[in-house]
Image (tube, rainbow over all chains, first blue to last red; front, side):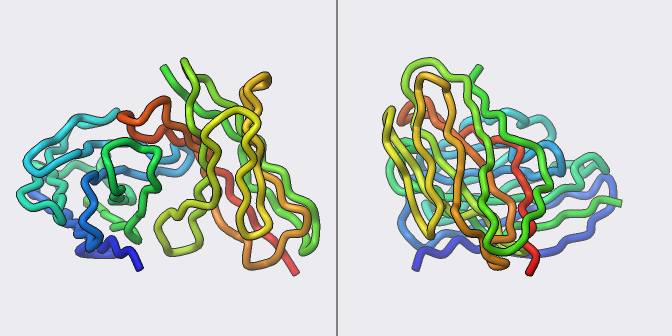
Length: 114
Length: 112
């Protein structure tokens, strides 16, 4: 079974804190993605990566950065958390370059910024 | 840019009722189309997909047909169950090197 795991299911942080969200996949997938999910807005792509040390901006990269030092791990970083970053964060991975291949999602991290 | 529009929810149905969730898209070229489902407390999982016009994707009793003439990919099921209660997302990718574009999701509640 494909497994995409995220470091926390729930996280509470304070405004201005640096926040790390970790995602690990065990299927040797090339591609990894970070989305945020908000009511009424659906899923929006923050960043994605097609290879180790490679990253591409998605639709809403402002206020976020990412790191992919190893193939199986893709981290999302909030340099200085703000209340408007309170959201559900979903990580996903897929096998080969190109999104014709199924994306596998983690269970999500619900982040609250106070 | 490419986009997906799906019917707003929530949709509430009785068990064994018929389901249709509308999805239309705007894209250049010939996108691939997907339906993902998110059960309560879980991440999304692929439900079905279609990669070219007139293809029909099907899984778990759900089906959707890629209609290029109407730029649509409506999700249908003949008889829903309580266990189908979830949020359903329509999505597309215009080519092999572009990430998925998702619709806003439609919440379905099925009551016994």
